[in-house]
View (spheres, helix red, strand yellow):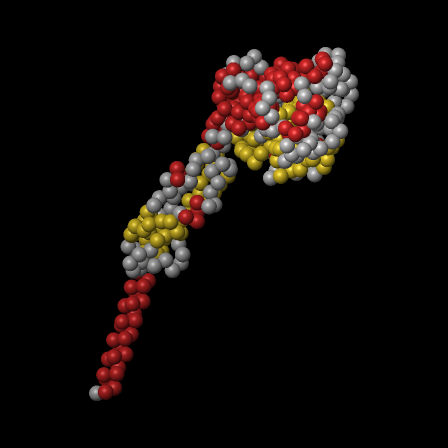
Length: 411
């Protein structure tokens, strides 16, 4: 009797184990519904993909149920600005008696394709002003339909810096006679990546405007015409490559027209007075036939506001400041009697270079920005064939001056 009872208990346990095992198998996920590949335009955000939040899965007992999906890991693997195919995996969220013993996942391939250059510029939202200028100049067809272009696209900040430097409005830039020439100077034939250009630098390429642009590698960064640095924005388009630049490139015909616009009117008057008075031993303004510029010159140009602030600090008018011996010392401290590209100064830094005034300027790269005596260079352009102007937001004061400029003025 006791043996029969033990046998009954064992049989009951076996039945229980078998039922549990059968229940576990029938609750395990066998497969998940499949999805076709998605084709989306470049710069389509992850959220705009509208990936499924729930999917149907088939259990091993052939039951079909719906489960939620987590795409958190896939979000980090998707780069909307880079053309290519992304294999995105979604994790199934199990509940109740459903288990995922085989780690079945939801897999969707997303093919990110490039549009034409104009639409790629628009979609990036980094070149809105550049696009506006292209449309104003009615060059849409060039950027949409031309084959194999490389476009060196100035950012919105670069274009704003240009109009600030020229002291014009954006509308005035749009209405300028040189707009088409300016834009086409940023475009070359044949699609080239930034890395391929770096590999062949120094390199000269012809632009659609007709003039050449020159490439060098400075401080491990690609520069154009010695002064304009590329940035980290590089995008593929269906008809070429877009490479972002930190400044606007200016062809010679534009430079000849706007060169004096780089110098604030008040400073132009000051320098002209100094030249004509004979107090300044060099022609800082390259008037036709004046001066010997075999070696060129480099001018570190304060903004008009910086000069006005200096005059206010000394409680003087600009006119009175110009008449002081101190000002001649200051302005000649902003001049080097050799022409230096911005890229050359990057390569030389940290260094010191003697000025026309006799003391030295100190150059150092801080956070990828070239500083002169702790003042950052905010822009840089060639002034005709005579030299280079590098813009500053402040005034350089010679080290020999006392801390109190008013005391220096009294002397």
